[in-house]
Length: 165
Image (cartoon, rainbow, N blue to C red):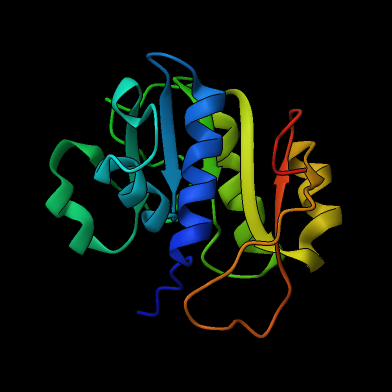
């Protein structure tokens, strides 16, 4: 399995964004975005101690996070444990594992199920039109970076006024 990790700067910036948007006592879901989840748990982002976060991830190595780990297979977008209630997250940050219409459509189902409203989606720029149609998100000016260079242009999309724009 190949994981594409955000650079430290990008993971921190995305973590800062979701903490700010979740607010005091807010809940954050990191869907296929373990590097942002890790930044939240490291306590290096101001306010991260005042929110709760879970990581929804296919890679079971992240089960080391205990109750914060939720096994997630985008092929079964709504196959989630009962403890993951509908519309129970103030912010959902998602990074679909594949750059395809099928994958984004299925991850969008999960996002809609989890989200109270705010969505931060990280995916290839070529998915802009579909992301907008599925989730009502628009592209931000912020350019996320990865530890390994990706061959496609990668962008962030939100459905709320954001400091990433």
